[in-house]
Length: 118
Image (cartoon, rainbow, N blue to C red):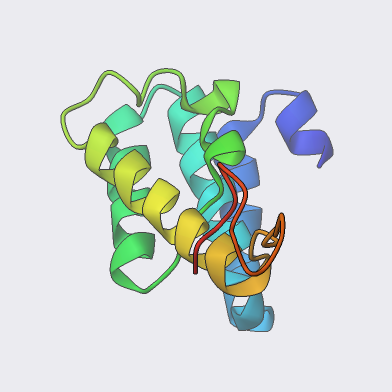
């Protein structure tokens, strides 16, 4: 997105908002981009509200995405920890359902230390 690199954040926000009607299946990505653009443009409270609204709609983002430097100004706000916690929990639930840890057995059904016991 050239507008981002050229630091035309308000114009980039308009593009993201316009894309919502044509790409409703991209709500998670567009919401995250919107929050990042708001955060980097100094509109930290709006960025946090955007992420919170997304969570209210059932969205979540992996913790490594939340580390994006565009959200640096948002991390000090009251409410950030709740967003982060909910996203970590959602990521853990997803990983447990879709990428379960393998069970390692030593012998006769004994689980090895540190192996998943589910």
